[in-house]
Amino acid sequence: GQQLNQSPQSMFIQEGEDVSMNCTSSSIFNTWLWYKQDPGEGPVLLIALYKAGELTSNGRLTAQFGITRKDSFLNISASIPSDVGIYFCAGQLGYGGSQGNLIFGKGTKLSVKP
Amino acid sequence: NAGVTQTPKFQVLKTGQSMTLQCAQDMNHNSMYWYRQDPGMGLRLIYYSASEGTTDKGEVPNGYNVSRLNKREFSLRLESAAPSQTSVYFCASSEGHYLKNIQYFGAGTRLSVL
Image 1 (cartoon, each protein chain N blue to C red):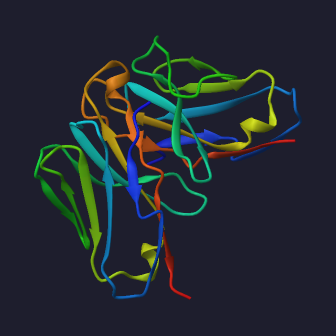
Image 2 (image 1 turned 30 degrees about the horizontal axis):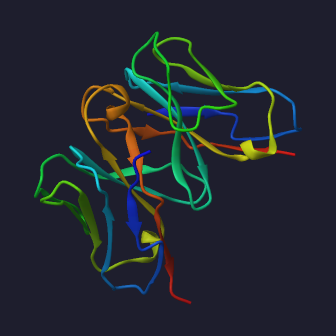
């Protein structure tokens, strides 16, 4: 099936640092979504992107829909301890049928630097 | 605002036992989904229901059955549980499978099969 390559798999953050992660695919998507999952909870939507080149912010989070429509990026500025968790990208190929389903990356796990 | 509610939150089964995972949403959404989440694998789609009265297989449907009981409820059944079905199961809903598929997730059911 379709795959999204999400990187990095994990990273350690120190309070105040900026964080970047991305998702890439060989397929063209019409929607990109970014979710965050806290331990013991379900994923929560952070940002939704619908157009190539679109740049959208949600507080300290900024995400971009890549120009080629095959990738997306999420940046977190001035990280704080509550940013730890797992971040997932998800892409939608089209509308209806199996194309309408979301394809998820394997996640980027953010932890606090020891 | 309850959103998506899943029951039970935790379950332990013996190999060969059956059980049904329940999911209900109060957002008047048309589409509902069942995923499983395994370490390092991200979220994988088991079954989905694009609209009331329809169900379709996702990426990993073997060993599962579903029922879209009404617009609010979508259940997942394991007829004969196997250790390979030990996982965290998430239900999600969205306004429409034929639109921008923004999905909202429940808190999950943690299932262990011994």
